[in-house]
Image (cartoon, rainbow, N blue to C red; front, side, top):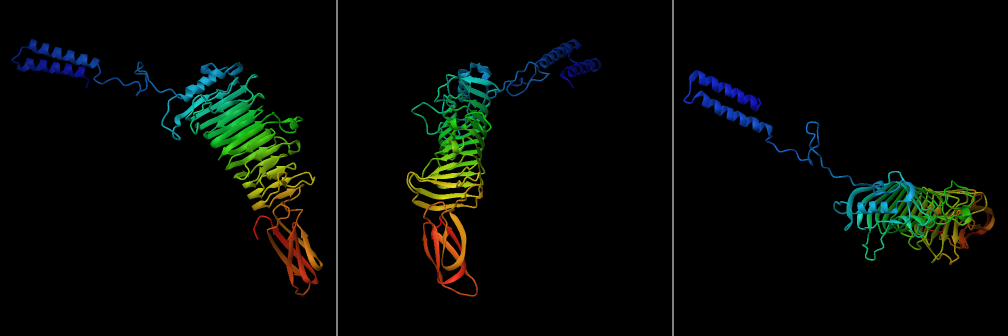
Amino acid sequence: MGEKTWALSLFFIFACLSHVYGNVHSYDHQLRKLQAFTAEIVHRDLISPFPSPSPTRFSPSPSSPSVVTVTPSPKIYHVTSYGADPTGKLDSTQAILQAISDALEGPTNGFLMQGISNLGGAQINLEGGNYLISQPLQFPIVSRGNLMIHGGTLKASDDFPTDGYLLDLSTSSSNAPEFLFEFITLRDLLLDANFRGGGIQVINSLRTSIDNCYITHFTTNGILAKGGHETYIRNSFLGQHITAGGDKAERNFSGTAINLMGNDNSVTDVVIFSAEIGIIVSGQANLLSGIHCYNKATGFGGTGIYLKLPGLTQTRIVDSYLDYTGIVAEDPVQLTISNTFFLGDAFVKLKSINGVVNGVNIVDNMFSGSNKGIDIVQLDQNNGPFKTIEQVMVDRNNVKGMNVKGTIGSGVIEGNGTSWTLDFNPILIFPNLIKQVQYTFFPSGNVFVNHALRNVSNNKVLVESDVQVSARVFVSVDQGKLI
């Protein structure tokens, strides 16, 4: 029952009682007291006894239209709000730099790596626009992490510095921390360097993700990752010139699509369709998987993948496609090339720098050529021969139209005489190197003769018997294992 109704009822009861039973007070006195009490109840009903809801805690509703909700603004920075021109006609450099600066100075929540503030997943949204850039978009503040730039096109202007990068995760400070950034994501971007430098530069950063990007018209590097750890490049397309192969200007392609100058990086499901070098690796413990290189044919001087860390390669190349362009490895130590398809006479070259090759597996690949007599694995010993050769296996490769080469070979010879010689030079990679030999001697008829392995030199194996006999001799050799 409401307070007004209750007051009127009480007034009626008191009036009746006074009339029937009488009271020490007059009726008029009782009436005045009840009127005053009723007025107080009505006044209190107009003012709620409970405080109004806080605007930060409750949302407005039709019954309370005057309540305003205060909520934290999302950490999404739209570059057009800063004046960036999405048509690409006007220079948007300063507008986007301001958006990057505001994002880096935005609210943080704790730390990632020690000293790197967590921006909480802030986003710089390019809103599907095309933006003209006249200078590198270098992050102005370091020691930040958990930020994404996504969703648009950046194109270098005609006066963009030729040694710059459109997106630049580096610093010009001489007093920089060990690691500049962590967990920066660059996603869904088209970067057009306009033949004026490179696409993305990542320096001394941790766990950088470059995903679903198209990077073109670079003259230096499409992507440069130097120092730091774990730059992951995925699902992206890179090419100096936009082509689908068979370009008439292919012999003039230059630049490098991806340059990995650090450790523990990964390149996965990436197409490199034009550049002089597809991927160059000069750091340890990198993984390349699902790479399709048709950047510049080996016949024109191109290289698909160049491993340039003599003596400490530690790289795995798996499930990839080298299309008319091959792999070069300098003094490879701990290198695996497996389940990869080499088309158009593409091959693997082991290049001697200090004459070391150790822990190399080139196995289970497919090679397809044009019957020009090209070896699937070749040696470059212009700087001196390989002198330290340990734990090398080149075997089980499927070859068509090229010459099979390996570290393991087998053969059979038969005839009537006292000596049998097998020459393994046509199939073995390294000259004058056989570390292990196994042979089986099968004489004809029911004769028993003495036989022995008499000589192993110049990749030739000599087996002799003490008497002349008609026999077949099976021999297998291995260059990678110790006797």
